[in-house]
Image 1 (cartoon, helix red, strand yellow):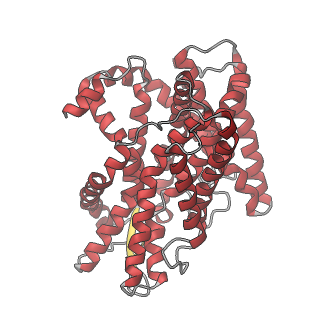
Image 2 (cartoon, rainbow, N blue to C red):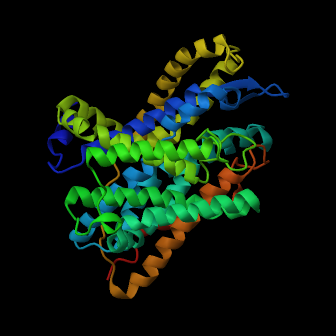
Image 3 (cartoon, rainbow, N blue to C red):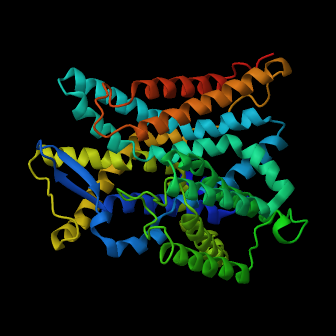
Amino acid sequence: MRHLARLAARTPPDRERYLDLLRALAIVLVVLGHWTIAVVEYDETGRPDGHSALPDLPWAHPLTWAVQVMPLFFLVGGYANAASLAAHRSRGGDTVGWLLGRSARLLRPTSALVLVLAGGALVARLGGAQPDEVRPVVWFATIPLWFLAAYLAVVPLTPVMYALHRRLGLLVPPALALLVAASDLGRAIGPAKLALPGHLLGWLAVHQLGFAWYDARRGHCRRAGLRSRCLPMSRRSAIALLLGGLAVAALLTGPGPYPISMINLPGQRLANAAPPTVALLAVATAQLGLILLLRERAERWLHHDRPWQAVIAVNSVVLTVFLWHLSAAVLLVGALHGLGLLPTPVAGTATWLAWRLPWVLMLTVVLAVLVAVFGPIEASTGHPRHLRAPVRWAGARATLAVAAFAAVVYALAANGAAAKTAPEPLGWPVVALLAYLAGAGTLRLLRSGWGSRG
């Protein structure tokens, strides 16, 4: 508590505390959403298996408009990336140095998960487990990595996209939304591969709004209308965003072709979340309006010590919580199965609903243990020691950093795309695992100062 009190006391007076609260709340919603919607059953071989209950609960599909919080992460990420890039440059750092600093916070806790799961899979194989037994466990535990793959693709584009924002302002998000609509049309009438650009374009559109929030907070507003660099923060604008986003989303999912659920369900050709569709962008717009309506009251509340210290505590391990929350489910299911105490109620039944509370409470205990073990890796991540490379190394250093990021994104995406039952010897696609280790290792080497010494 004393440590949290010291951190709270050192908070800069101009910090947008509300963004930290949004990040913490988004993580809590993701974790609780995944846990509460899970259905555990036994497959035909007698092994525990799990899936989402959403296909069996059509009444819950409209609720996904509130609990689909991936747009929040990119909104907050856009603000945070713009703020950290500006601060890094003010200290004399270069763009690659900033990128390496962001990679440390994102990849150190991720690498812990990757190495533990690969090591656990190796131990299981040596103990006699077959690849088709190991892969489902790794697949389920690494479901959160699809989001990280998308975010890691967006982060290296921040310097370019922020420069574009400073030139064109609020024209950029709607332009990106139009490209998302074209991507949606392509996958609706053509090959599914036409959806691939949407994985980047949709999240970039939300990320740009984070830039606009940052510029509004800093008073960098020189133009009016869509050429403005600032997000409109007035109550009237917030209501317009909320109602306008809801109206467009209702039209797109009612008479329109998009499904109501903002979380992907099996068999949906035009699923909303991965990649994001214009329907999800409309919901994100409504969410932004609601967020802005609550902003001033939340900021005042966060200037009290206890709520702000709680937000600091969650944010210090926020990525660890996100990365390990499904591993907690794997461990709990394995333990209950081993003891012969694993309940398998049918989704939507009274028994299933009654089991939600003890299920979530037990998972919370397991996750708390995992966070206690792995949280310090994230909490202790600092800034890179080297801010700028000598001119003769700058090009090679930048190329290596971008290539390393690309390798990590490929690895996480390839793992997510691989079949749940693929007979992978270590639970991961071999090429994906090697690409991740090479990319993360290269970024670690660059952060240590290689290529930055004269």
